[in-house]
Length: 116
Image 1 (spheres, rainbow, N blue to C red):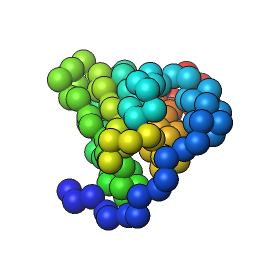
Image 2 (spheres, rainbow, N blue to C red):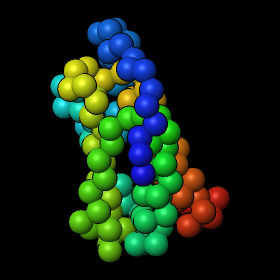
Image 3 (cartoon, rainbow, N blue to C red):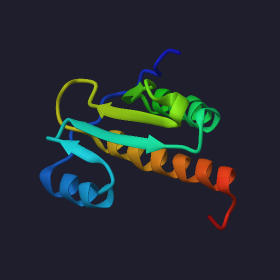
């Protein structure tokens, strides 16, 4: 899968970064350049389905996303989002985190039904 080439967005300023960081409190922030989150899905099938969709989102948004599938058999995937240039995270990077959260919520709704 090739990454779509997109112009680089300028890094977030401190005020905007802090605001978005509060909205993504379920992610671990490592400085201003790296996000991390562990995902737990009902099983391997759901985890791999989410991963396939998440990889597509990452490619379409031109973000550098790493997926760790070492525990996928138990339904667990870990994800890192890093800035492509090694500098501060951009709005696209944090926007991808929001989209991945929504995608995981959808996956859980489908697996457990709307009332779980």
